[in-house]
Image 1 (tube, helix red, strand yellow):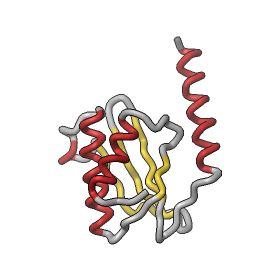
Image 2 (tube, rainbow, N blue to C red; image 1 turned 180 degrees about the vertical axis):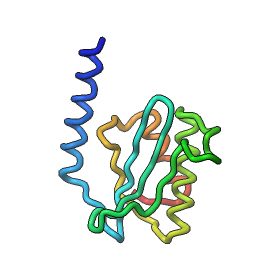
Image 3 (cartoon, rainbow, N blue to C red; image 1 turned 90 degrees about the horizontal axis):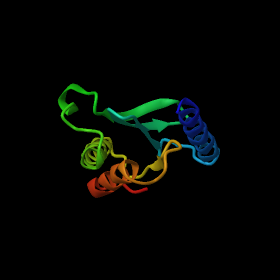
Length: 120
């Protein structure tokens, strides 16, 4: 079981490195990256030229702890992130799935941000 889990992490890391070679966020179009665990979800929007986080949202925040790490929760988190980005006049981002497959929770989070008005 442990070997299987390590193999799964190794494959995700390999996908992540391959994706990050091509994706680079800027001030006009920052990179929106997703962090997923069994208990929580997080999203960060990063300007890679300066190395600054422009906005973030997580289910670990006090007012968002009721959101679960499932499809519905990911959609809600994506919408909240979209609203925070629109407040900062950011309308377009590059989506970095961070090596995760674009399916399920990751797709729901991207769809939630699109629903709020963010373009990918």
